[in-house]
Image (cartoon, rainbow, N blue to C red; front, side, top):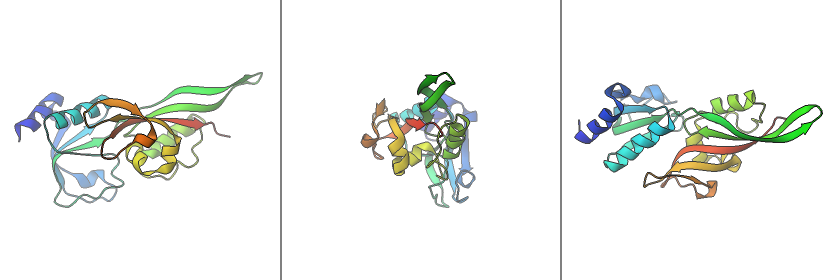
Length: 194
């Protein structure tokens, strides 16, 4: 193993990595070869740290979420393959009215991490009595879809990204670039169910 990969493995612990891991287990197509080195990032901190280390050490890496929009060659992928399984969702604030019948929520500001599947996102919105219309039936995760899906982009208030210099910042949707950014999380403005 390249000594640079060993630095990353030692930093997180060998038990967090899989060697020659079949990627077909992690893609919607159920196809694809093995990853030389495979890691699952469960938190924003882990995701930022491992990508920053790869960049600092000039190591190739491949990042994906649910695997619904990728095809991997049967010959597999060299370098480090990172699966984004970040899962945080939190309601940051709510807007509403207080009446004699109680508090009525009109809309909420919700932050969701990039590894969250759209399915889990819809379940959360539904459980909070927030509108899910338009979000249902979108395959994949928040992170991958924000680059592709205009509906999601239109509802995003801001996006937290890791840029090419491994700096974390909040940007507006119109500044999002597939070549320059890795999405860490996004803040959405969601209306209450009618």
